[in-house]
Length: 122
Length: 113
Image (cartoon, rainbow over all chains, first blue to last red; front, side, top):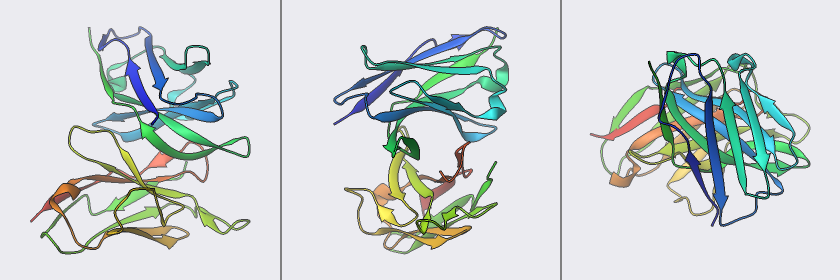
């Protein structure tokens, strides 16, 4: 059964860049899409974006191009970089699998990895 | 963006009773070409990750108890738990995947009365 685990720093300073990695185990990273989602008190669940195993990506415009998602199929990992952090980026960050439907993201997310709380503070 | 609005924000139901959560989308999530509603429901229990319950608005994910059902079409959807069990205490979210950015409802907290 596929499992996802996010890792990265718990505390990041304002204006800096957040880097998170999600490791996929128990299944192949190929033939799927992979998403990042976050949950903050102010905005609830927010989809950040996805990447396919082949590297095509799509992002939420609300992040104003601060997010970049990459994939490393050799390591069965995908990563999120979020730049120019502010307190509003404080959230629990989740990674999740999205299905490949005819070469496109299908959109429902299953399974989700254990969330990691990231606090942006000086 | 498609805005998803759930009601109520919180709900307290007695054990064995029916619980119904509503989700409305700001535009239709029904694709006419395949007659499918691009709507999913998730359950997030305390301290756990969100778990997919239902997709295509009414298809239960494998292993989800049949007391959970999804209904609706277009812009108006319901998640119904036919007979509430103690283990169903959770926050429930709807999500549209009709178009990006995928968006979620604000969540409905379900408790035991």
